[in-house]
Image 1 (tube, rainbow, N blue to C red):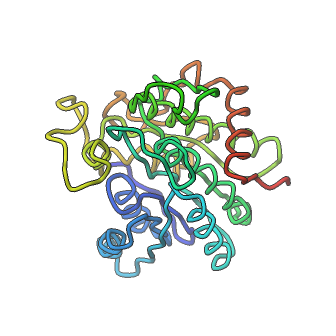
Image 2: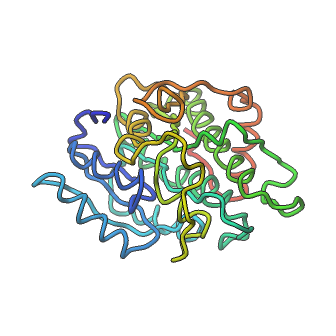
Image 3: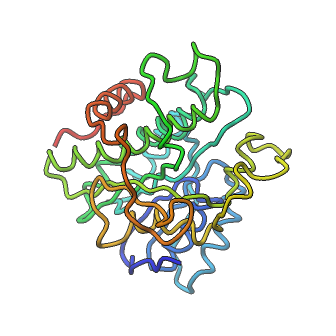
Length: 302
């Protein structure tokens, strides 16, 4: 497992921290000394995860706060609470996600569920928390993408899949490619505006989490018979979380870089290659502008 460097004195937000890679990241960051805020949609599941997180060390510091990334009003309320209660935020881990629901669903704001949750919700949260992040001496934003991003296309004429026949896997791939653009364009903004912030992205390879099981049933009690992609070689959450932890904490992690398992679907954290679409800076800038207008959130001008 990736050994997380000392995080003493740092305050970290992890979205989707009640299960899977988010829960594992929260545990490891807390164990490394960080004050971790578990950002979860379901407070009961968050409370259950918190018990495990607090058990990582006798002086563990962690708390649960509720946010629904599929509801921009909830994102705003969550961010407002943090801005009220914290003087700075050191790290934001954009980890939460929805994967391949069986049919098209919409967020509270009328967006396709995967697009609205995986990308728009995280972009809005990032923009709203940037003032807190920029108040920290060495802030970081690490955004979780997916190997599916390699197959993604940004369809500006139909980002919410309202005109085309709905393809949940293609919609997921689009949202995860957008997450890479989020991370890389934020790194570009940091460089051009002189911010100390480090933004990058990661993917977990093929890691067994509830994305593969709850995703196709939309988190209902009904579960698919076997995870999507089974029986490919895979990792459990402790190993699969290594890439996002590397991106969020390692001194060698670079701005705008992309990290994943060395052998694509499994292995220790390693710098991953960027596809041609991931390197399309013009698309990233256009996407950020569209998403900022859609969510009515903008980064600080300074």
